[in-house]
Length: 131
Image (tube, rainbow, N blue to C red; front, side, top):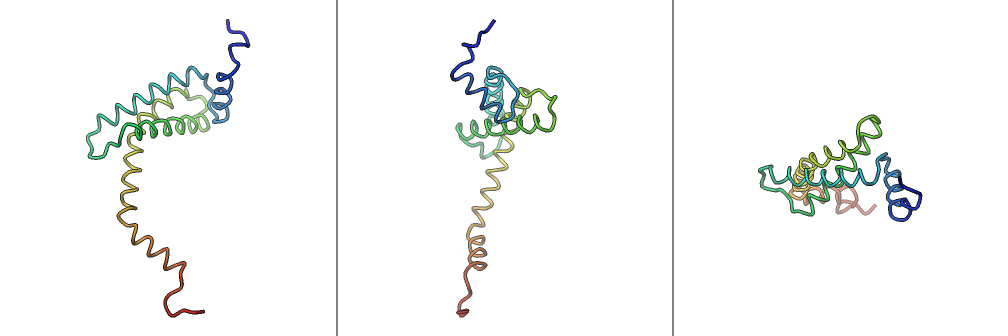
């Protein structure tokens, strides 16, 4: 049986952070689910045959972000759904989210000059308009 001294320090801070995120899960369960989630994220990124897989740290960051976001959304909309499963599913689907993000940013980069010209045309007056 645990006494109150076991929950002091970092464990208590971690519990408060999880509660602030809206995740009703024990810190140990969260860590275990995150390890599985990040493993699934890396596995999904390695198994997908695409030209842009992203590097190791980008995959981990996307896995972490998608996992926590999925757990927060599932906890809010489906409170009876197990948080640990939401974390793992978020990590598994993070590979897709990363590819969507990279594709979106590539399209913006390709059209950056056109976007900048449109923005400047709206903000700056045309030549000859001294009013």
